[in-house]
Image (cartoon, rainbow, N blue to C red; front, side, top):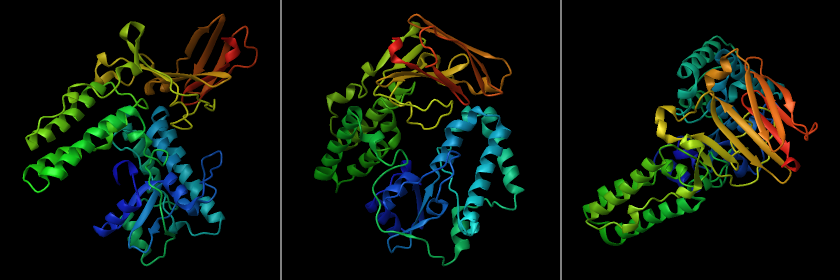
Length: 414
């Protein structure tokens, strides 16, 4: 698994040259490589499962590429943490059966195909009930008792196929598992500023020190600084309560590389790379507000349909002053989003995982200008009831709840 599922033709050729047998990336990279969109039905089932659920041989090399199921992987990464864990395991298990049934109905042998679930393994479990143990046990109990599904490693799958011929991918467009591009890591001014430090430092090493003993340790610090996580937090796409620490550590690695060379680091490294003005302190310092960046147009269905639906809106998160153990949220709310397009204002509320397992009704009340809005949510039954929809809004207010609460309001109200 290359960092962030990032691939390019030179990278793939290097992997093959060094003896790797296969690698992995996202289905979006596959779509661009074969110039074909992977369409799904309303249940997330691909219309052509044979396109996604098998590896591709890269050119004429003895080297293959597996492509992860983006939809199913995101269910584990972002959605199932808010569900009853047995229900979540059953849901995923049934998705596998649906895929198998679809393959069979197309006259294909399901044993020839493999579904790849790939996601940030260290990240989601702390937000799951019992750290994901209940979900995983329930899932693997069902899988181990199934005659229709087999859990295999990629090595076992490839060994079991013998000399089977897989489709050939003659070319691939560079990209990652985040929308098939690299924009998260060099799409904004903070990213550019950080990469510029690395660029200048590497030029210095290769121009003056590459044949000296000093270069080895300096390059080690550069490789650390080139890690994708630094650039995940630079730019305003993402927020972490530890942004100050991340920024300080990144600059420290650059400084250490200069120190290994016996060179003085640029004085500009004493200043933060990130832009503090992109955060606004609010509500007595108990919450941070991330500024809206662009129009949004989310589907109001109460589901986290896509990670990018709300990425352009404002986000309200807990202040880092409470420490890392509390950064997931405050009270029963983990975060709140707001945004708009030319005609509509949108609101989303994410709840703490345990809240959605309680039988108590959740009341939501707020006012927009002269309009009062009131809702009641039954988390166990996945029902939201409109108590008061605002005097001036008529029937134009739309709301939904399943994993999150979402609502939309016509801008003419403001």
